[in-house]
Length: 421
Image 1 (cartoon, rainbow, N blue to C red):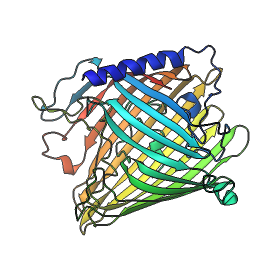
Image 2: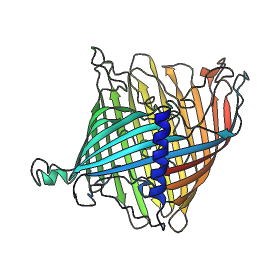
Image 3: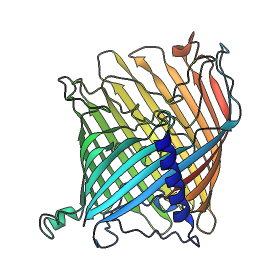
């Protein structure tokens, strides 16, 4: 804990230095190429465009960080009255340390460390990757026409399946998420991967390979394979309208992949002690839902539209268990936001999210619903305050007689403050 406290102090000092900047200009100054800005400037950025930005002028190290704290006022109940009583209070603050290094022209490294998270109060590495946007290290302009539209990423980090992971909260990195929680089926995992992305005239193409595992081992039987890909279009129709539509697929075999696609977030859920049974230890991950199929095939479709200050983002997802007799689940989600103010510093909006399906083919179904409504204020491009009302319910024959989930419901107001730089 001493090490964590020291790092947290350093993070806050860095935040104070980074945020003591005059004005509210949304231009972000940095010496990194092909990089998503950490703050308001990075909103609605998915795959970073093939625009290098600044010229390479020697090795550059950007030390950044994220800090988030919640004040939660949620109540909960179920039919058995077995759930713990919750009271309005602060949750554990969370913090990230981010290192982004421009090693050479078109060559960058990213590393994120969770300084403090719900699941681990001690510091530990989330993951990182190595990104190539040109091959000038071999020879200047080597395969330049190919690399003008191509990117390679290699690492042990989140894979690019679906578009929802670009808008989710990643421990303390919550500034891209207009709400507090992530989607019920949170398709996020950190795995060893190799990935190629092609971006040309609005066309988006991604192909990747991983072993499907969160924790690695050289032992026989731990060497499965999972493949994933994405295809879509992202274009500025006119000055006021941007439209994006992508479809993604993830497929794993029964070759010891273990499949962490919906269980790879080691930071923990942003709603604290929800569905905790009285007198028992709380799960760090509820109310997230993980189908826990040993291997699976998943599809996700994501429409995104911006019209002036209004924006819509959607999730249409289905996951099918690989083993014979396994069931399937369908997730639907939609966010409608309106951003306003001189620099769109304010926003209001709502999200609806539902998951329905069964663990086995023909088995009893379950339904999980969640509704959020709220808003936020960017005090500066790197400081965000949010407030939301959330309501979640559990229903279906699969929960009949279940002491935890039958008739379970939670609702209340959550405030979240965030700094990212």
